[in-house]
Length: 271
Image (cartoon, rainbow, N blue to C red; front, side):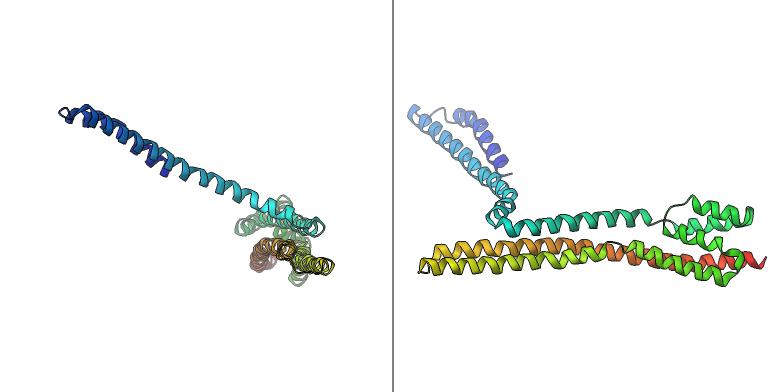
């Protein structure tokens, strides 16, 4: 934006220069030449200022994009690689869970309405066929309940509760591994830091003197593992909380839909 303003300022000076020259027809040629040189110097100054303001922006952007790579390379690959692998595996599990939970979410009201209409029109077989064609854990639970419908409402309730526990376990599959990676990432970082500090003190002992360059370099490399470990843990923690919230939402919907489903089955059995 500064470059655009400077360019507009330079263009304005160039367009106003002929007008100023016409107004100064009575001025001497020396004065006109001096004025022209002044305008040219202002134009060059504005262009130089625009270039100076534009170059740091590009350099700053390039430095920001390369900073993490450079810091990662500066760290000890022996300890940085496990942190990176922990983050990759954790992100893989998190993305898989988010997609699975998103696909498991469905319109339970529409499903209940379809089951009720199927029971009224075609009975148990039609309702089971309708649930078989629907996706999601709720449809699987209702299918199991409809299969036990002839044995009474209590058996249907037990079947719904039992399969509901199984489907809840499927929703929570892999979450324990994600929590492990969240705890493991900073621990690996701290371990790399401690080992790096020990190596730095060993170097001081061998040198026989405390050199600021030697101490600062060793400590910087050691602390980089902690920084990357904490960054990985924070990113995975955000995904973990998102997954837990999605699971709680799905479980609450399953429980509400199961209550409505039992009411529909009980009303059908009374007929």
